[in-house]
Image 1 (cartoon, helix red, strand yellow):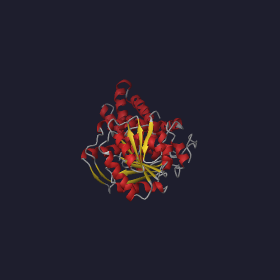
Image 2: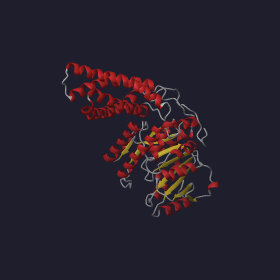
Image 3: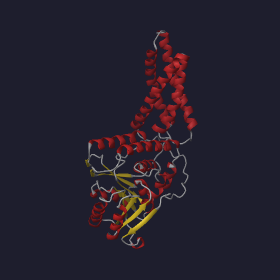
Length: 418
């Protein structure tokens, strides 16, 4: 990393402090007013109510006010508090640096406003200390969570998680709650693959963790929104959507070594087969199908006046069939990379032939019985024929991608150890 990372001061030399079980990171930027009360409250809680040894690490993200001075003063006054200063802003950047360099067994973080009830900290880290889970997150969207925040933030949060579920097949419930923990050994394996250094860091980490097969523990939390939060919601949403596109493209192209990490960490699928359940596949297949049908209709209308109905149907169906197979390969059935891509397309073209027979046959029958039929009637007949062809295509593609859940290779990622 290009940032300058400096351990500024701690209550005692790091070497003389017993290695903590949990390292709680509080990332801050220009929080001179809130930092003191936050750390004092957190420090008291860890001393009085927490069964594991713990350290508080204040990660200063290039603050321009007196935040760093306040942090140094806290480190001087309180045992088990240290300060790490970074020359660049970014919550994700700070967490990556501190988590990767921590000597603790479990690394965690929470927002400086302490919106989350501290009583959730033990349920958050206990499954990680025991080794049962790899990553733990607080969730504000569970039925048993108690949350106080405005309808605007609630709507944005739920919409964002819906986007993650549909576009990246995410199963976790709350990506952006500022209350997470991870086993340090696993963090050192996964964090080098997380590119974002700002607010999308959490989402990217969770998506990669799920794809690798890490066990993610979710803790319902009591959470009170900070009305004075300085987060720019619009800018954050824009960057998050850019991050979703980037990660989705990386997963689709096979650029991320998911299979290798699965093998290295020991979390390969329990059995081979098509990932996701039938319902999930149908939903994603339907999304791809709607886009393909709209593209098909547009192409048919554009081509029909130049080429005639049969040729227009053939060309529109061929173009959308190739795109449809590629989209379903990645999005619906979870097949990544270039392995067997040509074979899958050839099998997809066989299914295209069935669709062509059904649609061309329906056009032939329509023209035989109603030779002067208008374009809108042709489209109606073709849509019905395509519905039948779509059902056959789903069953066929499910067979084609029946080995989608298998890991085709077990190469070892450099520097990764189980």
